Amino acid sequence: MAQLTYGDPDGYGRHGILQEGPAGFVCHECGRDDIAHLGLHAYRAHGITAAEYRARHGLQRRARLVTAAIHDTIRTNAIARMTDPAGKNFVTARDPSKATAARLAQKPQWRPAAAAAVAAAATVRGPKMRKGRVVVCAGCGAYFCPLTAGARRTYCTKSCARRNRRRQPQPTGTAHGTWKGAAHLFTRLVARHN
Image (cartoon, rainbow, N blue to C red; front, top):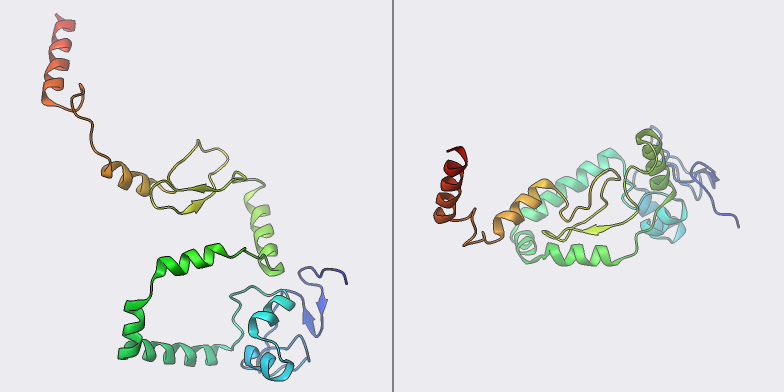
C-alpha cells in the first residue's frame, strides 16, 4: 500500500486533517460526523487507542480529539484534581528532568500534518535558515540548531551565555583583574603621553 501524504483521501476524511463539523468531529474510520470525544469513540467502536488513531490517520501527536465543550470540562476537572491533597502530592513528587529525559530518549516521529506545517514555514522563511547539525548548550544542556550565518555557538541563548560567564571565576594576577595591574596600565599610559 502506498504511503499517504497530507491531504490525500483517507477513509471518510483527509490524511493529516481533523474535520470538525457543527455537531462534532468526523471519524476517518466510519464517517460518523457527530462525535464529541473522538478518542473514546475510536476505542469503543473500532478498538484502537487515540494514539493509534492519530498515527493511522496522520494527525499530530498533540491533536485535540475532543470538542471545545468537552475540553473545557476536562480542564476544569483537572484543575480541581490538582488542588486537592493528592494532586498537590503528585506535583511535589514529580521530577520534570526525568520526564524530559524520557521524552528525548524516544525517537521523534514526524506526522504528515507536522511535516506539512514545517515545509510551509520553510518556504516562507526561505530554505536552509539553520545549519544541519544539532548542538548541545554548554550551559543548560538544551539542544539547538545554530543559524547558518551565525558563528560557532556553544550556548543556546545570550542570557544562558551571560549566566555561565558569571559563574566562571575571574582570573587573578593578570594586568586586567587586579588593582596592581590597573596601576601598571595607568603608569604606562602616562609614560606614553609624556
